[in-house]
Length: 461
Image (cartoon, rainbow, N blue to C red; front, side, top):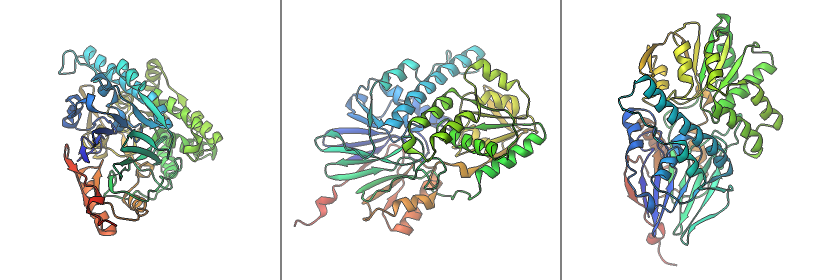
Protein backbone atom coordinates (compact mmCIF):
# COMPACT_ATOMS: atom_id res chain seq x y z
CA UNK A 1 0.00 0.00 0.00
CA UNK A 2 1.13 3.53 -0.75
CA UNK A 3 -0.20 6.88 0.48
CA UNK A 4 0.72 10.16 -1.27
CA UNK A 5 -0.09 13.59 0.14
CA UNK A 6 -1.22 15.66 -2.83
CA UNK A 7 -2.58 18.43 -0.62
CA UNK A 8 -3.33 19.59 2.95
CA UNK A 9 0.32 18.89 3.83
CA UNK A 10 2.10 21.89 5.42
CA UNK A 11 -1.09 23.89 4.88
CA UNK A 12 -4.80 23.82 5.76
CA UNK A 13 -6.25 23.66 2.26
CA UNK A 14 -6.13 21.58 -0.93
CA UNK A 15 -7.00 18.27 0.74
CA UNK A 16 -6.10 15.36 -1.55
CA UNK A 17 -4.72 11.96 -0.54
CA UNK A 18 -3.90 9.24 -3.06
CA UNK A 19 -4.24 5.71 -1.67
CA UNK A 20 -2.94 2.82 -3.80
CA UNK A 21 -3.03 -0.93 -3.32
CA UNK A 22 -3.18 -3.97 -5.61
CA UNK A 23 -3.88 -1.94 -8.74
CA UNK A 24 -6.58 0.22 -7.11
CA UNK A 25 -6.12 4.00 -6.92
CA UNK A 26 -8.47 6.03 -4.73
CA UNK A 27 -8.38 9.78 -4.16
CA UNK A 28 -9.61 10.79 -0.71
CA UNK A 29 -10.87 14.38 -1.06
CA UNK A 30 -10.29 16.65 -4.02
CA UNK A 31 -9.99 20.18 -2.69
CA UNK A 32 -8.80 23.58 -3.85
CA UNK A 33 -5.74 25.28 -2.42
CA UNK A 34 -6.50 28.68 -0.87
CA UNK A 35 -4.39 31.35 0.77
CA UNK A 36 -1.01 32.59 -0.46
CA UNK A 37 -0.34 32.94 -4.18
CA UNK A 38 2.13 30.04 -4.29
CA UNK A 39 -0.62 27.78 -2.93
CA UNK A 40 -3.29 29.09 -5.31
CA UNK A 41 -0.99 28.49 -8.26
CA UNK A 42 -1.06 24.76 -7.46
CA UNK A 43 -4.69 24.73 -8.58
CA UNK A 44 -3.53 25.61 -12.09
CA UNK A 45 -0.74 23.02 -12.20
CA UNK A 46 -1.25 19.52 -13.59
CA UNK A 47 -2.32 16.91 -11.05
CA UNK A 48 0.75 14.77 -10.20
CA UNK A 49 -1.21 11.60 -11.08
CA UNK A 50 -2.91 10.84 -14.43
CA UNK A 51 -6.64 11.16 -13.90
CA UNK A 52 -7.42 8.18 -16.11
CA UNK A 53 -5.64 5.94 -13.59
CA UNK A 54 -7.99 6.89 -10.74
CA UNK A 55 -10.65 4.34 -9.86
CA UNK A 56 -12.68 6.46 -7.43
CA UNK A 57 -12.87 9.66 -5.43
CA UNK A 58 -14.22 9.58 -1.86
CA UNK A 59 -15.12 12.90 -0.20
CA UNK A 60 -15.03 13.59 3.53
CA UNK A 61 -17.24 16.68 3.13
CA UNK A 62 -18.32 19.51 0.84
CA UNK A 63 -16.15 22.45 1.85
CA UNK A 64 -14.36 23.82 -1.21
CA UNK A 65 -10.90 23.06 0.20
CA UNK A 66 -12.01 19.41 0.16
CA UNK A 67 -14.23 19.26 -2.95
CA UNK A 68 -13.52 22.34 -5.06
CA UNK A 69 -10.98 20.74 -7.41
CA UNK A 70 -13.50 18.17 -8.68
CA UNK A 71 -14.62 20.27 -11.69
CA UNK A 72 -10.98 20.54 -12.77
CA UNK A 73 -10.61 16.77 -12.39
CA UNK A 74 -13.66 16.21 -14.60
CA UNK A 75 -12.40 18.68 -17.18
CA UNK A 76 -9.12 16.75 -17.30
CA UNK A 77 -11.00 13.57 -18.14
CA UNK A 78 -11.95 11.86 -14.88
CA UNK A 79 -15.15 9.89 -15.46
CA UNK A 80 -15.24 7.60 -12.40
CA UNK A 81 -17.50 7.73 -9.35
CA UNK A 82 -17.38 10.42 -6.66
CA UNK A 83 -18.58 8.81 -3.44
CA UNK A 84 -20.02 11.03 -0.71
CA UNK A 85 -22.78 11.05 1.89
CA UNK A 86 -26.21 12.26 0.87
CA UNK A 87 -25.65 15.49 2.78
CA UNK A 88 -22.32 16.12 1.08
CA UNK A 89 -23.85 15.32 -2.31
CA UNK A 90 -26.63 17.85 -1.72
CA UNK A 91 -24.19 20.50 -0.51
CA UNK A 92 -21.80 19.97 -3.42
CA UNK A 93 -24.71 20.51 -5.78
CA UNK A 94 -24.94 24.01 -4.31
CA UNK A 95 -21.29 24.73 -3.60
CA UNK A 96 -19.61 23.56 -6.80
CA UNK A 97 -22.11 25.44 -8.94
CA UNK A 98 -21.60 28.55 -6.83
CA UNK A 99 -17.82 28.18 -6.90
CA UNK A 100 -17.88 27.87 -10.69
CA UNK A 101 -20.09 30.95 -11.04
CA UNK A 102 -17.73 32.92 -8.79
CA UNK A 103 -14.76 31.80 -10.89
CA UNK A 104 -16.52 33.02 -14.03
CA UNK A 105 -17.75 36.26 -12.44
CA UNK A 106 -14.34 37.18 -11.03
CA UNK A 107 -12.66 36.50 -14.38
CA UNK A 108 -15.26 38.69 -16.14
CA UNK A 109 -14.88 41.42 -13.50
CA UNK A 110 -11.09 41.35 -13.87
CA UNK A 111 -11.41 41.63 -17.64
CA UNK A 112 -13.90 44.54 -17.44
CA UNK A 113 -11.74 46.48 -15.00
CA UNK A 114 -8.38 45.36 -16.41
CA UNK A 115 -6.74 44.64 -13.05
CA UNK A 116 -5.52 41.11 -13.86
CA UNK A 117 -2.04 40.41 -15.19
CA UNK A 118 -3.59 37.82 -17.53
CA UNK A 119 -5.21 38.89 -20.79
CA UNK A 120 -7.83 37.66 -20.82
CA UNK A 121 -8.31 36.43 -17.26
CA UNK A 122 -9.80 32.93 -17.32
CA UNK A 123 -11.77 31.03 -14.69
CA UNK A 124 -10.14 27.97 -13.15
CA UNK A 125 -13.27 26.08 -14.18
CA UNK A 126 -16.72 26.81 -15.52
CA UNK A 127 -20.29 25.97 -14.61
CA UNK A 128 -20.25 23.32 -17.36
CA UNK A 129 -17.30 21.65 -15.63
CA UNK A 130 -19.19 21.65 -12.32
CA UNK A 131 -22.34 20.23 -13.91
CA UNK A 132 -20.30 17.45 -15.51
CA UNK A 133 -18.75 16.22 -12.27
CA UNK A 134 -22.00 16.49 -10.29
CA UNK A 135 -23.41 13.76 -12.52
CA UNK A 136 -20.65 11.45 -11.25
CA UNK A 137 -21.67 11.63 -7.59
CA UNK A 138 -22.76 8.39 -5.93
CA UNK A 139 -24.60 9.15 -2.64
CA UNK A 140 -23.62 6.75 0.15
CA UNK A 141 -25.17 6.18 3.57
CA UNK A 142 -23.28 6.54 6.83
CA UNK A 143 -21.64 3.40 8.24
CA UNK A 144 -22.50 1.31 5.18
CA UNK A 145 -19.70 -0.62 3.39
CA UNK A 146 -19.14 0.47 -0.23
CA UNK A 147 -17.06 -1.77 -2.46
CA UNK A 148 -14.09 -0.27 -4.30
CA UNK A 149 -12.52 -3.49 -5.59
CA UNK A 150 -12.20 -7.14 -4.62
CA UNK A 151 -9.61 -6.15 -1.99
CA UNK A 152 -11.05 -2.83 -0.83
CA UNK A 153 -14.17 -1.17 0.57
CA UNK A 154 -14.85 1.93 2.65
CA UNK A 155 -17.28 3.25 5.25
CA UNK A 156 -18.27 6.85 6.03
CA UNK A 157 -18.70 7.69 9.72
CA UNK A 158 -20.31 10.94 11.00
CA UNK A 159 -17.67 13.58 11.75
CA UNK A 160 -19.88 16.48 12.86
CA UNK A 161 -18.36 19.71 11.47
CA UNK A 162 -21.01 20.40 8.75
CA UNK A 163 -23.91 18.57 7.11
CA UNK A 164 -22.75 15.31 5.56
CA UNK A 165 -19.22 15.50 6.97
CA UNK A 166 -17.59 12.12 7.43
CA UNK A 167 -14.47 10.33 8.51
CA UNK A 168 -13.44 7.77 5.89
CA UNK A 169 -12.40 4.26 6.92
CA UNK A 170 -10.83 2.41 3.98
CA UNK A 171 -10.47 -1.34 4.46
CA UNK A 172 -7.80 -2.26 1.92
CA UNK A 173 -6.08 -5.63 1.67
CA UNK A 174 -7.13 -6.45 5.23
CA UNK A 175 -5.98 -3.15 6.77
CA UNK A 176 -7.89 -0.11 8.03
CA UNK A 177 -6.65 3.28 6.84
CA UNK A 178 -8.62 6.05 8.54
CA UNK A 179 -8.96 9.64 7.33
CA UNK A 180 -10.49 11.82 10.03
CA UNK A 181 -11.68 14.54 7.67
CA UNK A 182 -12.50 17.79 9.45
CA UNK A 183 -13.66 16.86 12.94
CA UNK A 184 -16.50 18.75 14.53
CA UNK A 185 -16.80 19.67 18.18
CA UNK A 186 -18.49 17.40 20.72
CA UNK A 187 -20.54 20.27 22.17
CA UNK A 188 -21.32 22.16 18.95
CA UNK A 189 -24.66 24.00 19.32
CA UNK A 190 -25.89 22.87 15.89
CA UNK A 191 -24.02 19.79 14.67
CA UNK A 192 -23.93 16.39 16.37
CA UNK A 193 -20.68 15.14 17.89
CA UNK A 194 -18.28 13.17 15.64
CA UNK A 195 -18.50 9.40 15.90
CA UNK A 196 -15.44 7.83 17.47
CA UNK A 197 -13.53 4.97 15.89
CA UNK A 198 -12.10 1.94 17.64
CA UNK A 199 -9.36 0.73 15.30
CA UNK A 200 -6.92 2.11 12.73
CA UNK A 201 -3.81 0.50 11.31
CA UNK A 202 -2.93 3.87 9.76
CA UNK A 203 -4.44 7.25 10.59
CA UNK A 204 -4.53 10.63 8.85
CA UNK A 205 -5.86 13.26 11.26
CA UNK A 206 -6.58 16.95 10.77
CA UNK A 207 -4.50 19.48 12.74
CA UNK A 208 -6.18 22.81 11.99
CA UNK A 209 -6.30 23.70 15.69
CA UNK A 210 -3.48 21.40 16.77
CA UNK A 211 -1.77 24.22 18.67
CA UNK A 212 -4.67 25.91 20.43
CA UNK A 213 -7.79 25.58 22.53
CA UNK A 214 -11.05 27.31 21.72
CA UNK A 215 -12.16 30.05 24.06
CA UNK A 216 -14.90 29.03 26.44
CA UNK A 217 -16.75 32.30 25.91
CA UNK A 218 -20.41 32.45 24.91
CA UNK A 219 -20.71 33.42 21.20
CA UNK A 220 -24.23 34.74 21.74
CA UNK A 221 -22.96 37.11 24.45
CA UNK A 222 -20.06 38.23 22.24
CA UNK A 223 -22.37 38.95 19.31
CA UNK A 224 -24.77 40.77 21.63
CA UNK A 225 -21.99 43.06 22.85
CA UNK A 226 -20.64 43.71 19.34
CA UNK A 227 -24.12 44.54 18.04
CA UNK A 228 -24.92 46.86 20.94
CA UNK A 229 -21.67 48.82 20.63
CA UNK A 230 -21.84 49.14 16.85
CA UNK A 231 -25.53 49.99 16.61
CA UNK A 232 -25.14 52.67 19.32
CA UNK A 233 -23.10 54.65 16.79
CA UNK A 234 -25.32 53.78 13.83
CA UNK A 235 -22.70 51.41 12.46
CA UNK A 236 -22.73 48.33 10.25
CA UNK A 237 -21.58 44.88 11.34
CA UNK A 238 -20.06 42.95 8.44
CA UNK A 239 -19.58 39.23 9.02
CA UNK A 240 -17.55 37.40 6.36
CA UNK A 241 -18.85 33.89 6.83
CA UNK A 242 -18.43 30.40 5.43
CA UNK A 243 -21.67 29.61 3.62
CA UNK A 244 -21.86 26.11 5.04
CA UNK A 245 -22.04 25.64 8.79
CA UNK A 246 -20.76 28.96 10.12
CA UNK A 247 -23.50 31.07 8.55
CA UNK A 248 -26.23 28.81 9.93
CA UNK A 249 -24.69 28.87 13.41
CA UNK A 250 -24.54 32.68 13.35
CA UNK A 251 -28.16 32.85 12.18
CA UNK A 252 -29.10 30.47 14.99
CA UNK A 253 -27.55 32.83 17.56
CA UNK A 254 -29.14 35.89 15.94
CA UNK A 255 -32.55 34.17 16.07
CA UNK A 256 -32.00 33.43 19.78
CA UNK A 257 -30.93 37.03 20.49
CA UNK A 258 -33.99 38.38 18.73
CA UNK A 259 -36.37 35.97 20.46
CA UNK A 260 -35.00 36.86 23.90
CA UNK A 261 -34.94 40.60 23.27
CA UNK A 262 -31.16 40.83 23.54
CA UNK A 263 -30.77 42.33 20.06
CA UNK A 264 -32.45 45.42 18.59
CA UNK A 265 -34.79 44.87 15.65
CA UNK A 266 -32.26 46.11 13.11
CA UNK A 267 -32.11 44.74 9.54
CA UNK A 268 -30.04 41.58 9.07
CA UNK A 269 -29.09 40.62 5.51
CA UNK A 270 -27.72 37.30 4.30
CA UNK A 271 -25.98 38.20 1.06
CA UNK A 272 -24.94 34.81 -0.29
CA UNK A 273 -27.09 32.76 -2.68
CA UNK A 274 -25.08 29.71 -1.70
CA UNK A 275 -25.62 30.21 2.04
CA UNK A 276 -29.33 30.78 1.40
CA UNK A 277 -29.60 27.46 -0.44
CA UNK A 278 -27.56 25.66 2.22
CA UNK A 279 -29.72 27.05 5.03
CA UNK A 280 -32.76 25.43 3.39
CA UNK A 281 -30.99 22.03 3.38
CA UNK A 282 -30.93 21.95 7.19
CA UNK A 283 -34.65 21.18 7.12
CA UNK A 284 -33.98 18.11 4.95
CA UNK A 285 -31.21 16.60 7.12
CA UNK A 286 -32.67 16.82 10.63
CA UNK A 287 -30.98 13.59 11.75
CA UNK A 288 -27.51 15.11 11.26
CA UNK A 289 -27.85 18.12 13.57
CA UNK A 290 -29.32 19.14 16.90
CA UNK A 291 -31.90 21.66 15.61
CA UNK A 292 -35.60 20.93 15.67
CA UNK A 293 -37.68 21.69 12.59
CA UNK A 294 -38.91 24.86 14.32
CA UNK A 295 -35.33 25.98 14.98
CA UNK A 296 -34.30 25.12 11.43
CA UNK A 297 -37.16 27.30 10.22
CA UNK A 298 -36.12 30.11 12.56
CA UNK A 299 -32.60 30.39 11.13
CA UNK A 300 -34.13 30.83 7.69
CA UNK A 301 -36.25 33.71 9.04
CA UNK A 302 -33.47 35.42 11.01
CA UNK A 303 -32.30 37.45 8.00
CA UNK A 304 -33.53 39.00 4.79
CA UNK A 305 -32.24 36.85 1.95
CA UNK A 306 -30.28 38.76 -0.70
CA UNK A 307 -30.26 36.78 -3.92
CA UNK A 308 -29.46 39.09 -6.83
CA UNK A 309 -26.53 41.39 -7.59
CA UNK A 310 -28.86 44.40 -7.71
CA UNK A 311 -30.22 43.53 -4.24
CA UNK A 312 -26.64 43.21 -2.99
CA UNK A 313 -25.81 46.67 -4.35
CA UNK A 314 -28.86 48.07 -2.54
CA UNK A 315 -27.55 46.65 0.75
CA UNK A 316 -24.11 48.14 0.13
CA UNK A 317 -25.76 51.51 -0.49
CA UNK A 318 -27.64 51.47 2.81
CA UNK A 319 -26.49 53.01 6.04
CA UNK A 320 -26.45 51.47 9.48
CA UNK A 321 -27.42 50.17 11.81
CA UNK A 322 -27.58 46.77 10.17
CA UNK A 323 -25.86 43.37 9.96
CA UNK A 324 -24.51 42.03 6.67
CA UNK A 325 -23.47 38.37 6.50
CA UNK A 326 -21.74 37.49 3.23
CA UNK A 327 -19.29 34.97 1.80
CA UNK A 328 -16.50 34.10 1.99
CA UNK A 329 -15.30 33.24 5.48
CA UNK A 330 -11.62 34.00 4.85
CA UNK A 331 -12.50 36.89 2.48
CA UNK A 332 -10.93 35.16 -0.51
CA UNK A 333 -13.74 36.24 -2.86
CA UNK A 334 -17.48 36.66 -3.16
CA UNK A 335 -19.85 39.53 -2.37
CA UNK A 336 -18.27 40.33 0.98
CA UNK A 337 -15.47 42.07 -0.91
CA UNK A 338 -17.89 44.73 -2.15
CA UNK A 339 -19.27 45.26 1.36
CA UNK A 340 -15.79 45.64 2.81
CA UNK A 341 -14.92 48.19 0.13
CA UNK A 342 -17.99 50.14 1.24
CA UNK A 343 -17.77 49.75 5.03
CA UNK A 344 -14.19 48.95 6.12
CA UNK A 345 -13.06 52.58 6.09
CA UNK A 346 -15.68 53.79 8.60
CA UNK A 347 -14.61 53.62 12.26
CA UNK A 348 -18.25 53.26 13.38
CA UNK A 349 -18.45 49.84 11.74
CA UNK A 350 -17.29 46.41 12.90
CA UNK A 351 -15.92 43.45 10.95
CA UNK A 352 -16.45 40.12 12.71
CA UNK A 353 -14.11 37.24 11.86
CA UNK A 354 -16.00 34.08 12.73
CA UNK A 355 -13.54 31.27 12.13
CA UNK A 356 -10.09 30.11 11.09
CA UNK A 357 -8.17 32.48 8.79
CA UNK A 358 -5.56 30.71 6.67
CA UNK A 359 -2.20 32.36 6.08
CA UNK A 360 -2.19 34.63 3.05
CA UNK A 361 -5.92 35.37 3.10
CA UNK A 362 -7.48 38.79 3.61
CA UNK A 363 -9.06 37.41 6.77
CA UNK A 364 -5.62 36.63 8.19
CA UNK A 365 -4.48 40.15 7.26
CA UNK A 366 -7.43 41.65 9.14
CA UNK A 367 -6.77 39.39 12.11
CA UNK A 368 -3.21 40.75 12.16
CA UNK A 369 -4.61 44.33 12.15
CA UNK A 370 -3.49 45.18 8.61
CA UNK A 371 -4.19 48.89 7.92
CA UNK A 372 -5.31 48.18 4.35
CA UNK A 373 -6.81 45.36 2.29
CA UNK A 374 -6.19 44.81 -1.40
CA UNK A 375 -9.57 44.29 -3.07
CA UNK A 376 -10.12 44.21 -6.83
CA UNK A 377 -6.70 45.63 -7.55
CA UNK A 378 -6.88 48.58 -5.15
CA UNK A 379 -6.07 49.15 -1.48
CA UNK A 380 -8.93 49.83 0.93
CA UNK A 381 -8.24 51.57 4.26
CA UNK A 382 -9.39 49.62 7.34
CA UNK A 383 -10.73 51.87 10.12
CA UNK A 384 -13.56 49.60 11.22
CA UNK A 385 -13.07 47.67 14.45
CA UNK A 386 -12.07 44.05 13.82
CA UNK A 387 -13.39 41.39 16.22
CA UNK A 388 -12.67 37.64 16.24
CA UNK A 389 -15.02 35.04 17.73
CA UNK A 390 -12.95 31.87 17.85
CA UNK A 391 -15.55 29.94 19.83
CA UNK A 392 -17.71 29.78 16.69
CA UNK A 393 -15.25 27.38 15.08
CA UNK A 394 -16.64 24.10 13.71
CA UNK A 395 -13.21 22.42 14.07
CA UNK A 396 -12.19 20.41 17.12
CA UNK A 397 -9.32 21.95 19.08
CA UNK A 398 -6.37 19.84 20.22
CA UNK A 399 -8.02 18.71 23.46
CA UNK A 400 -11.13 17.62 21.55
CA UNK A 401 -9.01 15.83 18.93
CA UNK A 402 -7.19 13.94 21.68
CA UNK A 403 -10.55 12.97 23.12
CA UNK A 404 -11.66 11.63 19.74
CA UNK A 405 -8.42 9.66 19.36
CA UNK A 406 -8.65 8.14 22.84
CA UNK A 407 -11.27 5.59 21.73
CA UNK A 408 -8.75 3.85 19.44
CA UNK A 409 -7.77 0.74 21.41
CA UNK A 410 -4.45 -0.15 19.76
CA UNK A 411 -1.95 2.51 18.60
CA UNK A 412 -1.90 2.91 14.80
CA UNK A 413 1.36 1.92 13.16
CA UNK A 414 1.72 5.45 11.83
CA UNK A 415 -0.30 8.62 12.41
CA UNK A 416 -0.02 11.54 10.00
CA UNK A 417 -0.88 15.15 10.89
CA UNK A 418 -2.39 17.06 7.95
CA UNK A 419 -4.67 20.02 7.22
CA UNK A 420 -2.75 22.35 9.53
CA UNK A 421 -0.17 25.09 9.31
CA UNK A 422 3.32 23.70 10.08
CA UNK A 423 3.35 24.94 13.70
CA UNK A 424 -0.13 23.57 14.42
CA UNK A 425 0.60 20.18 12.82
CA UNK A 426 3.86 19.79 14.73
CA UNK A 427 2.20 20.83 17.98
CA UNK A 428 -0.45 18.14 17.54
CA UNK A 429 2.25 15.58 16.68
CA UNK A 430 4.02 16.39 19.92
CA UNK A 431 0.82 16.25 21.98
CA UNK A 432 -0.27 12.89 20.56
CA UNK A 433 3.22 11.47 21.09
CA UNK A 434 3.30 12.64 24.70
CA UNK A 435 -0.30 11.81 25.65
CA UNK A 436 -0.89 8.59 23.70
CA UNK A 437 2.68 7.46 22.91
CA UNK A 438 1.86 6.84 19.25
CA UNK A 439 4.39 7.11 16.42
CA UNK A 440 3.41 10.38 14.71
CA UNK A 441 4.74 12.40 11.80
CA UNK A 442 3.98 15.50 9.77
CA UNK A 443 4.11 14.72 6.03
CA UNK A 444 5.33 17.17 3.42
CA UNK A 445 3.63 18.17 0.17
CA UNK A 446 3.84 15.38 -2.44
CA UNK A 447 5.48 13.01 0.03
CA UNK A 448 4.73 9.36 -0.70
CA UNK A 449 4.92 6.70 2.02
CA UNK A 450 4.74 2.92 1.97
CA UNK A 451 2.17 1.44 4.35
CA UNK A 452 3.41 -1.97 5.38
CA UNK A 453 0.90 -4.72 6.10
CA UNK A 454 0.99 -5.11 9.90
CA UNK A 455 0.12 -8.79 9.51
CA UNK A 456 3.39 -9.47 7.74
CA UNK A 457 5.29 -8.91 11.00
CA UNK A 458 2.96 -11.01 13.14
CA UNK A 459 4.01 -14.56 14.02
CA UNK A 460 1.89 -17.30 12.51
CA UNK A 461 -0.61 -19.03 14.75
